[in-house]
Length: 426
Image 1 (spheres, one colour):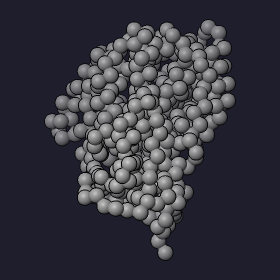
Image 2 (cartoon, rainbow, N blue to C red; image 1 turned 180 degrees about the horizontal axis):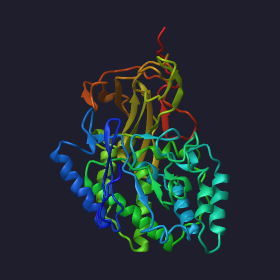
Image 3 (cartoon, rainbow, N blue to C red; image 1 turned 120 degrees about the vertical axis):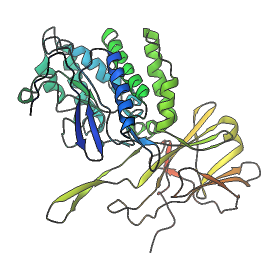
């Protein structure tokens, strides 16, 4: 029931969600106020053994979001209603930089995730482009209804859910529920440190100010398969993010990349490092499966989380000396620059029911062998087993090379170990 509180009090909300306790902070007028709330919550949480991360099976986020909402101090003073061009500038810039979609979100990304990009939700780039152009063509005035109607059908998930979108407008102009004037950025997961979360919020705030003063009007970019290939790999994602920081620095908002690099290393932990070779966890799309009947006549829908993606990166000298074989199949590395080479690797990690392709076996243990290009002898072998979080070095052993790993589409950075797999159950 409503509580009658003095108008100068702040109210914080706690809601029980499956597996987590959802915390809703009160509106904050300044970034410093927001940061202070995060610090207090972190201290209070520790005192009652609550955390914004999990430690099992590894240090990860809670699976819950740390979404950021921006609006005005009041409906009458909302900064977005009279600036539709600003909103178009924000949306165009975010679409051009996949790092803003993928670097700070959870492990579950892509079309059926909790925060799909507008160009991942079944919308054509033409429809998005036309909507953003209409925003840019609006004259001065209060355009809250037009903004909402132009965007609400496009900023959704694949089912049309207006809440589940990377940039959600379901709280922007909603007569049945009140006039909120809020834009919600949902591609941010809970982070293990309050200063990390505060840094992301400050970055978002700086980006919004930058895109108001320096509008971004470039046409939407057709990434093709690069979006779910190149930008699912940690190294290209970091390159894109440094470009974002570079634009802000030129404008006058210089951020120290060190804190964001720490977040990047936490999101994409190295599970093998050896003399110029690094293997990191990468991003993966988990497809939504068909309805599964349940007892009592109801149905459930699952995502297929059986696949995992790794990034294998190497410096120039290493790539010249060694060829990389995964489970006896050569993995081709492609150049990102003259000194940096990278490949993605998709493999089947589990076979829980239900999942796709039940006849393709689990491809663990995963063995990486380094073969000297001159002698064609295996010099090092590393193995990842289901019960281990990292690769473990083992004694080198000879093997008969199989067919090289292949990408699903020519030109992709990522190879799929399932393609032309030679071992199937009978």
